[in-house]
Length: 292
Image (cartoon, rainbow, N blue to C red; front, side, top):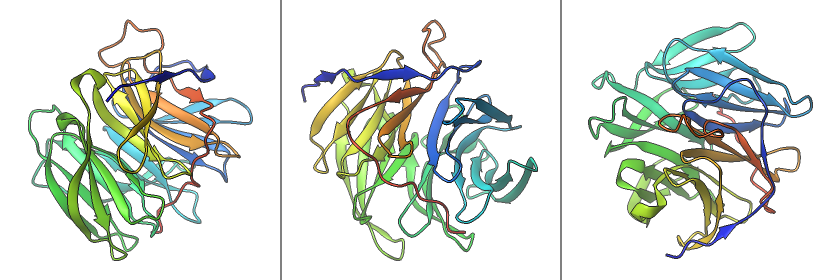
């Protein structure tokens, strides 16, 4: 596939730190804030759009994602030790449980909420030394279920516009898979959605826009790309950092694309680890919160 690069308005959010491994941006419209994580700091970061202020809360262990809870002020987080509730006001952490006690060297890595309010979360080996990653589902009743295994780096879930397809990535294999997603949370008919050529880097985090197309971050490829639902490349936007990690639409009109990156391995790059803001000319979908 030929990759055509577009140029769009680009901003870098001013803040005192760079993310060693930025990931998982999520827009919270009721707060007017964008949250994301730095997995290796480890920390939750946030940006207040009205004031431009940024903040951070440190954690004692790697944190793969942060997701709001419906009708509440606290969050669900994915840690090396498993699922937990986090209250930013009190600074308190309430463990829920470890979905992978048999893999003590794994950690949770990237997650999204489906149309039924369930969390789909991947995992990976911390040192990338084994294909021990998996795909888990956390239900609103706080039970969890493993759906797929043997991932090098389980990454970037997102969904089709009608919610009937779940897309999930094995970054290590440069492959994005698609599954049929049933109303009961069952997955079926796993198939390859697309494979990245070596020159593109590795598929990382992703999101779905209001037209049902997928935006995928290129780790090692310095860009994000948009694909239609049959996997055809539509456009690509180059960014001034090699390791692009994830993306999410945000802002009052859902017309700004927030893109995380990593300084890991690219410390010499001035913009590596920055949070980028793009105006892609397309709107995203309203964010979803965990129903539990």
